[in-house]
Image (cartoon, rainbow, N blue to C red; front, side, top):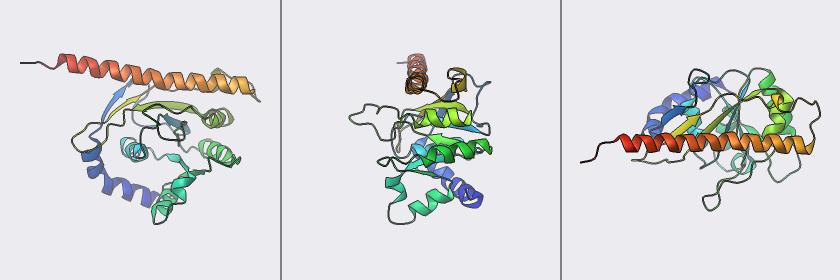
Length: 218
């Protein structure tokens, strides 16, 4: 990660991002987990659009995150792959049986870095979430790092407002303490992680509904 490139990107892009996303952030428990991500934690989110990555760069402004990025973006022509590398992105080749990114992510976490993961790996099809890949669970168990679950509604664009819900920290080691977890244990952790993300979705929708009800009508 190149700090100069990272903060140059954040500073120059902040005002355009603020206008485009116009984000509003909610918390399950702000005292337990705010917008500053502790070192050595994993940011885990649903994946609505390609711009989720840019949104989190700005929302977690003072907490640099190494995001897992698919090969399709890292192979694009032009300056994007260079920028992604300078921002500390970790390459994932989704269609290859190569899992070096799991160990690389764990090493980043053990050294105090933060890792960002979109476990769906792909954008929604027909508006439906894709299944969670188990790689995020494997990173969390190998590193022992806490997970910060986050939900975004993906409501991006001029004249729109993006809503984000930040959850409390979760450590999968508490649910799977074995050194060499079985497939069933990894699957159970994956389902637990998905349920935590969906809880954020439900809570956000509940709070937005209450806000709408509180707006006076003529």
